[in-house]
Amino acid sequence: MPHHILVADDDPHIREVICFALEKAGMKTAAVSDGAAALRAIERRTPDLVVLDIGMPEMDGLEVCRRLRHTSDVPVLFLSARDEEIDRVLGLEMGGDDYVTKPFSPRELVARVNVILRRARPVPPEPVDERQFAHGKLALAPASHAASFDGKPLALTGIEFSILKGFLARPTHVLDRDAVMANAYAANIHVAGRTVDSHIRNIRAKLAAVGCQDAIATVHGVGFRLGRCG
Image 1 (cartoon, rainbow, N blue to C red):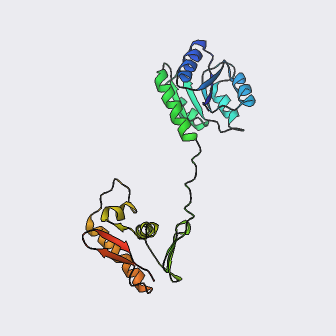
Image 2 (image 1 turned 45 degrees about the vertical axis):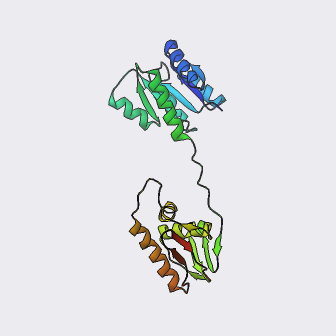
Image 3 (image 1 turned 90 degrees about the vertical axis):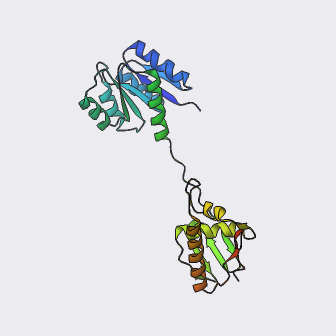
């Protein structure tokens, strides 16, 4: 669905320019010429963002925003013919999200609107991995970051947990060092081979301490594979 933008400015030419630029960018617009009309329009239909001129007669944009903030957190982009710091500060303190000085570039205004809309968009929570991984007597629960062997808890670091989870996800596969590290680090991070070996050694030691002597086997010249974990 296209974003719905309300434009409030007493200058008909500026309203026309802004609406044209926003609609060209794929948005829907409505325009009003004074503050009272802006509040009525918002009451009828809450827009995704309000472009609000500060210098409107009778009820200026700052007063509109002040009243609006009693009932709504709709994003507000202020417009002003004055480029003074006090106006910017006041506008932002009133609850504005950004401030553009006239004359302005329509392209820049559209870019600023898009930035505010992206920032205001609810961020969906990352999906929780509810899967349970098990192999032999080894078990991992990613959602609770819990690991155990034969019912005995394992204290793994985040990297160790991710590496072990990668093995349990493909228990019959042989993983080379790059594949092992891809399970634990971002793709653009380079990790030395000795670091990989240190992580594997630590995982083996922790599992051995709870009775698992065959956790991860070395396949010489290839990489590593998960042991029986029996």
